[in-house]
Image (cartoon, rainbow, N blue to C red; front, side, top):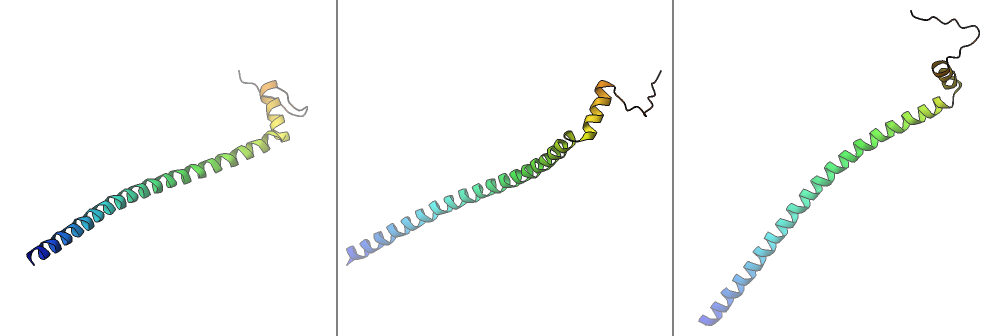
Length: 95
């Protein structure tokens, strides 16, 4: 009878130790997952900001590409780099 009680206590103690170990192990895993979640959330925010900036830059490049293909660009380049002007334009030079 005394042996039976001892075996029951030992069995319960073993189960209690296993349960405590599993709870501790799961707690550590949950903490790691929360940390990774925070890191991923921060990275997502950073990438979203970067995506918005790149979309703006893409729009600017599209606008610049349209400008380069326009007659206005050709005229501006001819005036600034080659010094060309239309016949009806008057040029003022600084002294």
